[in-house]
Image (cartoon, rainbow, N blue to C red; front, side):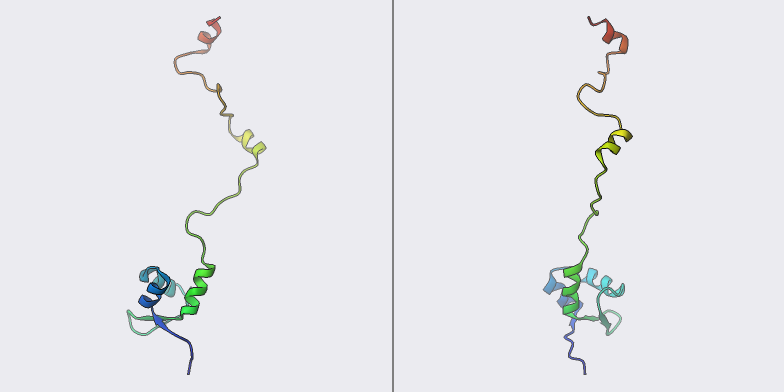
Length: 98
């Protein structure tokens, strides 16, 4: 019949050092080829699992392109040294400090 090697989710999790729950979820989402034997037993093709790991998206938030500095300066005020007034001084106090 088929010469495809099939292993259980638990065995695939041990081989690829990942969670069996996560692999089962990938099977249920049809991202990995699987065969449901019983309600709780799935068999997977280890080559398909390896291909998933080779092309899997990276974890975390995707990086976005940085805004152009000229556009950014128009959108937000400059934050350089001395751009903020001290809390206790007012504009009239600054003028009188001659």
